[in-house]
Amino acid sequence: QLHLVESGGGLVQAGGSLRLSCAASERTFSRYTMGWFRQAPGKEREFVAAHSFSGSGTSYADSVKGRFTVSRDNAKNTAYLEMNSLKPEDTAVYYCAGKPAYGQSYEYWGQGTQVTVSS
Image (cartoon, rainbow, N blue to C red):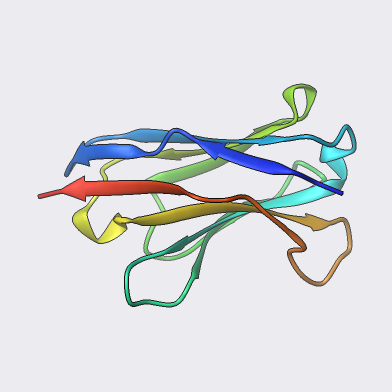
């Protein structure tokens, strides 16, 4: 079972940057695709970015392409989301999630970290 803990959220002005971290408890962390999702007040949770378990593939929502970068350090069992050029519409609770290699869905979720971007 993968236990995930996010950190790094906070309040930042528009145009600023934040780096979120997602620490995993499981030594088999490298066998999971790690995804980032977000949920703004009154909206459904949406996909932000993902980094494949193989380490070679990343994907991004169109709304964050060119501004956000997803990465991972398997030696530290940690995934990261670097967020630059933040906009007020990026304000949300950000969640990391783990999907087993070749799995169909994200099975493990962190508790979320709040990101607030002021205009």
